[in-house]
Length: 185
Image 1 (tube, one colour):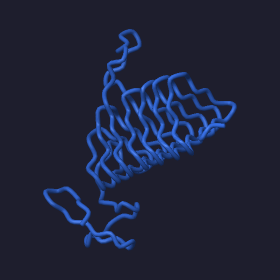
Image 2: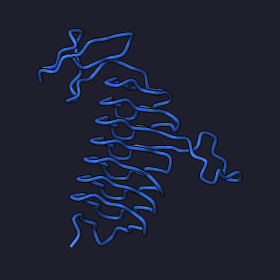
Image 3: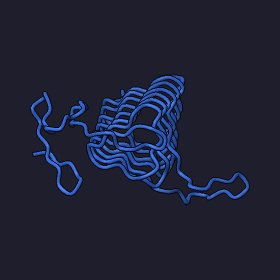
Image 4: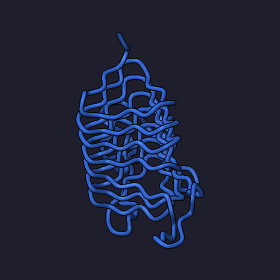
């Protein structure tokens, strides 16, 4: 008996590591070389590309493809149908053959439904990307991003609530700005 769950309609290739307590639901595909941490959840129709590394406690909602070149740290939320890319100038007749731009989604970040993260960028710790936003540059930790292209419209607490000018959250966490970067205090 395994320490994880894979629905009978899903495919898990050889040479895959799946952590304890992880659940892989209907019609998923986890490709060779992928590493999934503990207590993750992959919703319906999720594709995890070759050699992708996913941390612990990650929630990937329905219809998301995480392509090779993308790294997802612990406790990240990927909303339904969010999109990752891995090639900056794709051409069908000039394939890149494993030369993928690196994308990193840092611990605790949340990606809203139908947002797009263009490859080669980092989404900082506990950042929140609004539904439908298109990330075209690096995102600072705790930044609240919205729009096309995504631009910063505020700051969010680690718990996900939007911070007001006091930079203190109802949950008790406090932050300060230094050189246009937010830090927990």
